[in-house]
Length: 158
Image 1: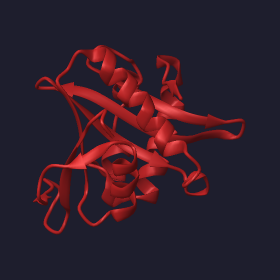
Image 2: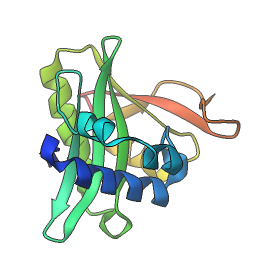
Image 3: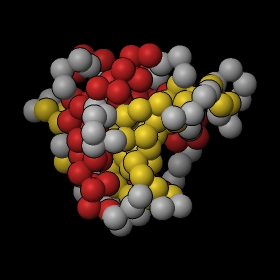
Image 4: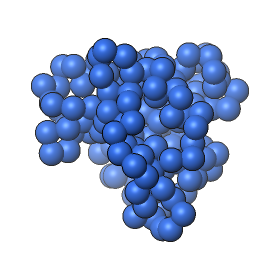
C-alpha cells in the first residue's frame, strides 16, 4: 500500500469518484459534492500530514483500492475505505487497513475507530477480521434518514 503523493491528486480524485459511483451509500459525501470540489481541495487531500493520510492499493493497470485516516479529538478515524469490485475478497481491504493501523501506531493517538453502515455486513465482517469490534448501536448519519451506521474500534488483540 502506498500513501498518496501530493503530485497524484488527479489519480486520487479519479479513484474517489469511482468509489462514490460504485457505493454512494458507503461515504459521508456524494458524487455531486466531490465533482464540485476545486482542484486546491484535491491537492490538499493528497498531502499527507500528521493529521491525516490517504493510501491506495495499486496494480500495473491502475489504482484498485483506497482508504484514509485522520486525527480528530485524540482519535484516529479510518475513512473512505473502498476496493474495486474485481479486487474484492483478495486481501486488498486487509492490506489497506494494515496501512492505517501502522499509521495509527505511529500517531500516538488513543484510539482507532471507524463508522460503517449498520446493514453493510460484508464490510463489518472484513473489519472484524482485521481486529475491529462493534462498540455502538446504530445511529443516523447526517446525510439523511435510513442511513444508519455503527461505530467499531480496533484492538490489537484481534
